[in-house]
Image 1 (cartoon, protein in one colour):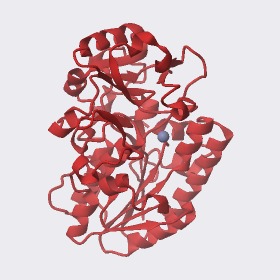
Image 2: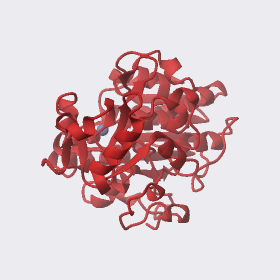
Image 3: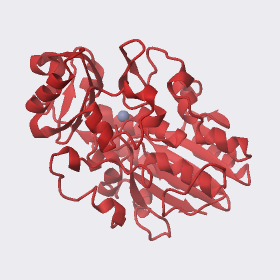
Image 4: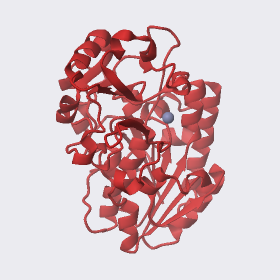
Amino acid sequence: MAQPAHMASAWPDEPVPLSLDTAPVPEYGTGSLADLLPTIAAGLEVPGFEHRIAELTPADRNCVFLIDGLGWEQIKAHPGEAPFLASLLGSSRGGTGRPITAGFPATTATSLASVGTGRPPGEHGLPGYTVRDPAIGELMNQLRWKPWTPPHAWQPYPTVFQIADTVGVHTAQVSSPTFRDTPLTKVALSGGTFHGRLTGEERMDLAAGQLAAGDRSLVYTYYSEVDGSGHRFGVDSDAWRGQLMCVDRLVQRLAEQLPPRAALYVTADHGMIDIPFDEQSRIDFDEDWELRAGVALLGGEGRARHVYAVPGAASDVLACWREVLGEQFWVASRDEAIEAGWFGPTIDERVHGRIGDVIAAAHDDVIITASVNEPNESAMVGVHGSMTPVEQLVPLLEVRS
Ligand SMILES: [Zn+2]
């Protein structure tokens, strides 16, 4: 499918030349995850929201199905395993199948907060997998919420679900019971009623019922295992393909149960890329004295690093990381990344110090591991985080009843 004109300049088919000016910044405001719920809410006439994604047309009943880790490029590459999803890629069914951008970094905690709050990372304040908490000077893992931090001080904005709920839109989240009371759910997805169900089939059936439960409804549902198998075994592994086949059937199951006047939107929080297990592709920060010089904390994840310098060393660290990483990464200072719009058009004051003094976003098929401090993450086959199309572009597929 041809990409919309406004995306053509930022997302060329050819690899982008490596300069900060040409890093493909997410399409905040017109075509990013943070624009989806506000556009739906505008269609439901919830006060305070405007229509941001041009192709979406309003529906009374709206379901967002977020498939963790299933990028746009992966669906395009696997029509055999995902025949139903692949049929939604173009506009042949009257839908608006197109890619949108996840946001930076392309990681679950960041993206879920962007979806739920309808705000870019610079505002909701979850700008990475791990980021420094300026109040204590330590890393905070935003997916696992460790160390525990008061959730609503960390992310104070109401979710779109909460706002829609107050004006009478029937809202619900249908996910795994394990996420019911997590801080990430609280700050990103609360509002209406949370329904925990263990199996994908139960979630689809319940989501369809919740859609029908109101004249105007907004329902969110979620599936995690495409991402999980990609991390463990790689994109394209048998396990990953099996998960793709499974989720394809789940989407079809939900699509076939849509009540009247409904729209189902299938999207994802990020794509994924496999990284070979060799020294050129996996740069081990914990073993690299050049990269470690002047660094107080290493945050983020392999393909999207927040680097926090010891006081006074930020410019030396920036110069060194640029020198060592060469053209394999986009390397920016905090100010450069903010200026370029990586985290959105505005950065709230409380978010500023969570962003690294230096940010390194992978351009090539490489990661910066940390074998001592992050043994589990460093052993992953499939990873994500950066701004390359395979990680950054996520589907926005539509089924209408
Ligand atoms: Zn993941």
